[in-house]
Image (tube, rainbow, N blue to C red; front, side, top):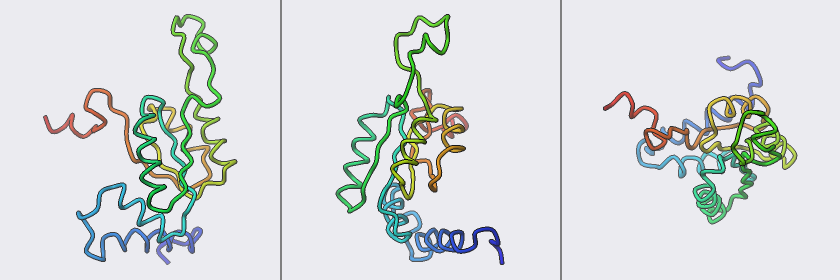
Amino acid sequence: ELFEVNTVNFQQIVKAAAQLVDNGKAGMLSRLAEIVEFSKSMNFQNIGIAYCWGMENDARLVSQYLRELGLKPHPVSCTTGGFKQSDINANSTNKAVACNPLAQAEQLNQEAVDFTLTMGLCLGHDIIFQKQIKSYTSTLVVKDRVHGNNPIKALRN
């Protein structure tokens, strides 16, 4: 077998992903539409959304979109369980709350989400989050403040 570890889950994922391409849908669906189709083919209902607080409005729109299509979104901001910046870094004069990707993952783990989307998590925070989350995870938005959340744009200019 190509996928020997956790074969049933891997085979289901490969099949669900292939259906997005094999049924003539390649290049026809947006990433969000693919996520909905994939989630439904995997019988995922509870969809976690781990987002950067700076993408609060976007996370709200994604939640609404998923809800309208019959899924149950569970959005969680990176500031969940956060500390003041000055508690993390004594030299900081920033009064904002620091991100806490561990608390973000823990909240989604407690909510027993089936599948999690990440939206704009900072580099490093995304690594910690992905290490701690127990659900399958995919990235919807990669943070790139310079290139409008499109990192590959740096190579195409």
